[in-house]
Length: 321
Image (cartoon, rainbow, N blue to C red; front, top):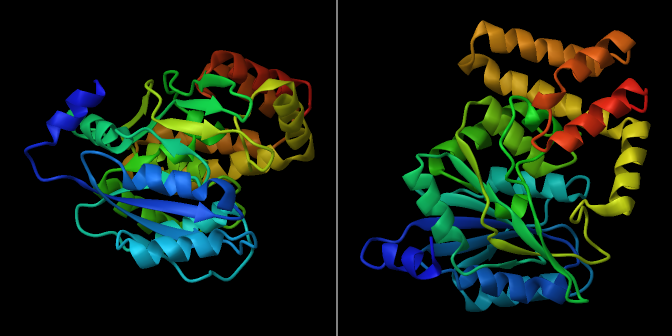
């Protein structure tokens, strides 16, 4: 779908409304460009709610400036508790108070959105009868390097236990699903959750949501030294993942996602799903060779990209995690 087509699609109808949630921390250098790219979205009515996590670099002054001069921008009071991007986003998700019929989208503080991001995604939600959409992104840095980060490989039965549905800055939820997810997060909590977008992808998929990962990039994904996660590619990223696997960090996150997914999905799935999910949780709880082999036998179902799934189970068989 071209930019002109998505723009024309909404030219003569009531515009859909989108609530964009943004978590910030020391992002003053790029924040204005990102907020402007959201406010300049075509084919939608948009408003932004921002939760800052204790910035010291002028981020709060920028937020206050937008709140004072644009009625579409609001901020939450500083939250209590441990700092961190995941807990900040999930706090924001729980306290955002969406209006009836409002879609919810997530935004990082340092990216740039394509002008038709939201209207394209809402068209996909409506045309495909989907509950959530994410997408590939275009990675760029200060040296002018650009490349597409592919996350749109076919979804697998258990990929949501082992990875997110792409960068959270591309997520948008239909109103019904966002209401379900907010209820689930409120009841399950999010203690120990290290990646908010992965957590919500796991809950949504386990709940049976129809989730589309669009192959067309909708976000310019900025890479810089202060990125919390970044593009997650290259030798340096592999070494960091290997370190986190060895330390038990990833196993802990896999278990958090699996247990939360089981709690979310149990009411809507049959006994076969229940049995398979309990077996998966058992294999993640145990470090025995038998459990590692059991994971290896279902390697194709663990991640969307086959090479990454194979890499994961080989490292499990070798006892790395």
